[in-house]
Amino acid sequence: MVVAFDSGEKNAKLSLRQTEILQKLSTIVDSIGADCPDEITPPTFHPEYGRYMLESTPGAPYTGSIRDLLSVESNMRYRRTLARKHLKPNEVPLTFTSFPRLGAPGQFTEPYYDPEDAVSSHSLFLPEEITNPHARFPTLTANIRTRRGSKVAINLPIYVDKNTPRPFIDPTIPWDRSIYPEDSEAKEGAALPDHIYLDAMGFGMGCCCLQLTFQACNVSDARRLYDGLIPIGPILLALSGASPIWRGYLANVDCRWNVIAGSVDDRTPGERGVKPLSPTDRFRIPKSRYDSVDLYISDNIFNRPEYNDTYVPFDEAIYDRLLKNGIDELLAKHVAHLFIRDPLVIFAESIDQDDCVSSDHFENLQSTNWQTLRFKPPPPGSPIGWRVEFRSMEVQITDFENAAFSVFVVLLSRAIMYFNLNTYTPISKVDENMSRAQRRDAAKQGRFFFRKNVYPPGSSAASSGSCSPVDGAPVKKEKKLRNCFVPPPMPEDAFESLRGHAVEEEYEEMTINEIINGKGIEFPGLLSLVHSYLDTLEIEPADMLQIQQYLDLVRRRADGSLLTAASWIRNFVQSHPEYKQDSVVSQKINYDLLAAIDEIERGMREAPDLLPTYYKGGNRDGGSIGL
Image (cartoon, rainbow, N blue to C red; front, side, top):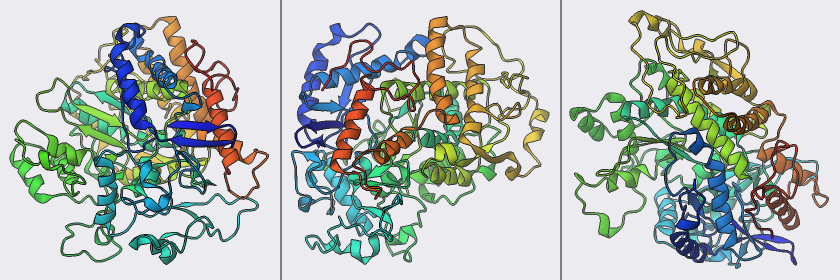
């Protein structure tokens, strides 16, 4: 997010100069190839939904080497530095999940626009100009509202402090506005008492997050990796929680997920189950098109039918067609499930295509089914392989934190594949975990359903709590991360332990600390599995030290000795001298909060309760620019 600081008014506002900034960065990136550090390919910057957002990606995929893995932080920092250098002196690029005063009274954008001109969203709070002007984005916004038959309605429980009014009836809602037909929805029940009411796509799609895309060796490995990471999504959502403030109020949640799911919920009343199905409705659809994964899809022997234990509608014609063309039932159902949704935007010039050489029509649906993971087939005619995208994490304040979470998930994905780990937990329990992950202080106080034994048959925990590869698997010391390890076939009787018992016996409720750091030899914790994987590699001491610093951050966030970003932000607000213990995050508090976050990122402010003492800030290589 590009934030403009007004020191005179003590106001931090969203800078709506995305188009101008991206044009400048595009020109700069085209000419800097020779000036990039050796390990960094010139990056790319992309537009996103919010006109204050810059999406940033590496210029080329990372390889499988340890050295490349450890270049993630410097790559992130280089991109931030590059953006910072080409902003106005008072503008700062912050990696922040949800802008605290988006939609609050007063001026929260630079320049200011009146929300009465919200022609796409009809929002009571967000002006049209908050949205990227490219036709795709306002059309998405309008089509979701039109298809749904009303504005989106998101209600977050207010954090009840000492002086919070009870019941809390938000005085900042323009209850009697009558510009658009939906303006009366708030007072007709869409805005709930004791909740923060949000009514537009921009509140969700205006959030930032941290996403990772893995390329697998083949389709089978991609399916295994997809399934293996599904139960991890809620755990990493809770651990990365970073968004406790919405529309100028402290909320009783720490994460963005339900906001963004609600912000693009285009289901009709019949599809949502609040009214009978209409003649044009085909299905009752339990979830928004942005939500957690609905199906495990791997055909490996661990995947029992009982794990897919929720109602999943699917297009039977698509399903039958796929079966007739050789696709197995699980993958066919996954694809047919995507086709219960309507396409949200279609451009006239792209309607007539040869589907034998183009997958654009499929991608139009695939790219607007936003889930905790995305299974991505190779584009036709491209060297890109089968990919899996991990999408649940909230973005962190510093590049160090974002790199730490990225490295942890990469190494965990390798451990899952290398040791052939079994993380299956019923989808209904994963859904429940997603709900629990968003609660206030879930990373420290919450309990989550997780599998008690992740070891495959033929493998066991050593006394140290570490894990061994499947019997007969080669253990070769090397620096390259193992992308395509295929364990040898195991005898049929090795899998007898997977059968003949209830699925309910396989999992139990654990804390985040137990899931990450372990609870004895029987369940060593995800970090121990990562360490076991690292033990199979030959890594230079200096590289191992950097890896251990990243893993130490994850360990300490999980055991509570370091705060999550959400808890740190909440504590900052509650300890601010202007805070009146009424749940309100004022303009001045917001200004001081975002200024403090910028100072932490640049290493100008210590935050020992958020970051380890060895973190020295983004300027440790001389790459950052002050306000």
